[in-house]
Amino acid sequence: MRWIKFTNPNLIVFYLFAAGVFSLVIPAKQVSATIYVESKEGITGSDPGKNSSLLADNTRSKTNNTVSLNKQTTPVGIGTTYEAQSDPDSVVSNLNEKRSELGGVSEEEIQAPVNDKQYDQDKVRDYKKRNYLFYKIFGEERLLDLKNEMLNYGRNHFAGLTRFFYSSLIDQLFSYPVIIVFTFLIFFFIAHILFVLMVLNYSSQLKNNNERYIRIYRDYYERITLSYLFDEMDWNTYVSRLKKFKKHKNRKILISILLNLHDNLKGGFDAPISQIYAKLQLEKDSYKSIHSFLYHHKVSGLHELTNLYPSGAIEVLPALMNHSNESVRSEAQKAYILLHPEKPFDFLRTLDKSFSRWTQLSAFNLLRLPHLNVPSFSRYIRSKHHDVRIFCMQMIVYFQQLENISLIFYVLESRHELIRFLAYEAINDLRLFEGRSVIKNEFRYETERNKKEIVKALCNIGTDEDIDFLEIIFKSESIALQIEACRTLYYMSPESRNRLLAMRKEAKPDLDLFVAHITDSRN
Image (cartoon, rainbow, N blue to C red):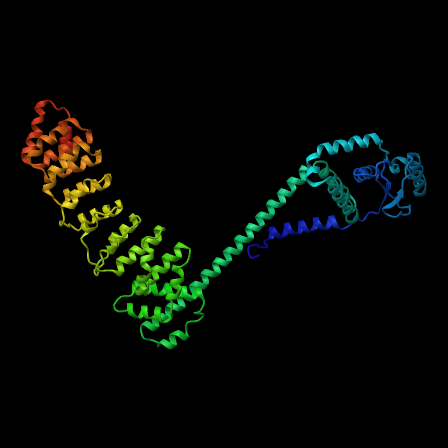
């Protein structure tokens, strides 16, 4: 792989690893003779059943004797096998004969210890008890066969100390099988990491190749499209130079270029861009995106039709205006505003779903376009959706729409706190003096936030008749309302200011602090 770099440290580690592997595989130079004592029926000679293989292997591991030959001795065949008699004495006599043939080898070096039958049975019983769960899961016969195969593999392929360590390792593994489980988990974890690294490497290369492909064709398509728009080539030449245009990916690249040019090129270029889109039948790709089950494909397809093929977008808008997905519904509502400049907000009459805050901001931004007429939002203020009424109240205040003022007072009956707050704000900003008595009557039933807005409104539309009302608030309400009432009394009229300053005689201890606070320019 490309990410593997053969630096000097890596090469040193590689050479050391290769040398270790070859040392394990290549046999030792020293010649050794090994005499195995085996029994066809097992060492115990009585039970050839399930435990015979295990007992035979354990006995072999204890009775194998490796005899190092002197320089004068003649090498005996490696791995020479003798059949042991059922009588231990006969086994010893045969071994003595072999010792005499070898010449000079002591009896302790060649004689194999003969295990007691009862000792072997206790050892097997203890082994089975320790590995009971392992036997239940994998089966006793399978484990014994596997162990014998692994031991035979070591005898046939390893030599010297390597074979000894390998046999000891196999005995330990099958004596404590939990080691096998952990070994398997370690190898599984390593394989999983390698698989993840391969997937990440492949996905990274695939992503880089895809980005490079898109960048190359984007630059190429943009260059020849600009040449066609500026009359540097005719239509037939333009189409002939669109390489690999029939591929879906390339058509999407060209659509994105046309959208970018539509947004940035002005002064009569809208019509040629739309003609390119229509002549190449790119609207078919947009229709496929709209009918996709993926919501972001629907949004992109509708955006393409809205800007490059308006008549096609008008056909699909009714089915998407009340879509269950908010992103699709928001895109459809923005498209309706753009494609219906005379009545851009008529969809609010038939809206069944919510009118999101993001769509409201987008709609407000679209209202700044010169070709859109600002409608009278009072016609939509009776909508059953709270978010629609909130949007209408904000637009009425922003565009200073004073027609149908009675509908603003109608909103005061709403159960939604924010809608009532916007109504009080509209009464204040639009200077609706006829609403003065109405908001005073609603004061006692309102929340803290709305009470504060009512007091602020009286600063602009209040009269001297409201001084007593404000004085009661200043003496009995919370600190926030007292500060706002003090501000209103101070700035509403000269009479209200004199009444406020006269309260000093009534031993109002905090009055000077309130006056200092409201007259501070930082507040």
